[in-house]
Structure formats: C-alpha cells, structure tokens
Image (cartoon, rainbow, N blue to C red):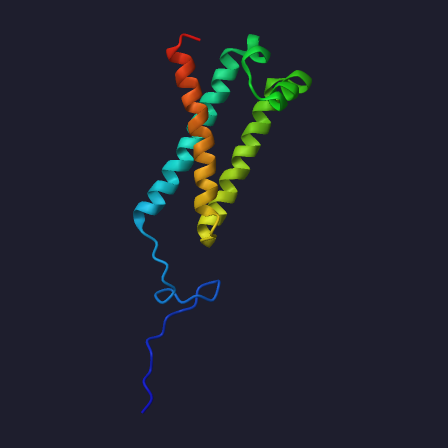
Length: 130
C-alpha cells in the first residue's frame, strides 16, 4: 500500500508552506517594522528641520536636486515629493516583504543606512552648534 504524505497546501508561488524551508520568525517582522519606522521618523525630522530653517534652506541643503525643486516650486512641492517618494518606498518594501522577495533585506538595509547617515549628520551638526 503506498504511503500518503500529509497534505500541505501550496502557497501563491507554488511552494509548500512547511517544506519550503522558509520560516517567518516574529522578530524578523519586528525588525522590518522598526527599520521602516526609523526611516519615517528621520524623514519627518528632515522635513521639520527644513521647515524650521527655511529662510536659509539654500545655504545648508546638500542635495542639489532638492535645492532646485525648492527654488522652482517651493518647499511645499519638495515636501510633497519627499512624502510621495517615502510612501512609494514603504509600499515597495511592504510588497517585497509580503512576497518574500530576495531584495527585501538589501532594500531595507539600504534605506535604513541612508537615513542613519542623515540622522548622524544632523546629530554631528547639533553637537557642533551648527
């Protein structure tokens, strides 16, 4: 008599849930969420900093594209563009995470690293009194 294997339903991508070797640990979800929350907090701080020091925006802003957008269309347009870009990045990250795409981790690490560098730049400027 042939042995019957336990029925394991197929996922969307045709992988068997238990047999696929992919285990979703709760701390991975927490780290993913914390990384993107950090990105959002730094982005919000960046916008608030730009608004507070808007009179000298062209003197301290390092990004030439941001300076040009602000010069041509104003800070409101720049903030809207930044919000749209961040929203798109979060949607892409969520999609990659949900589909377990291999770019989820590199994409999240890249975004987090860029925003970590930006936050360190702000901290150094703050402690130097600038």
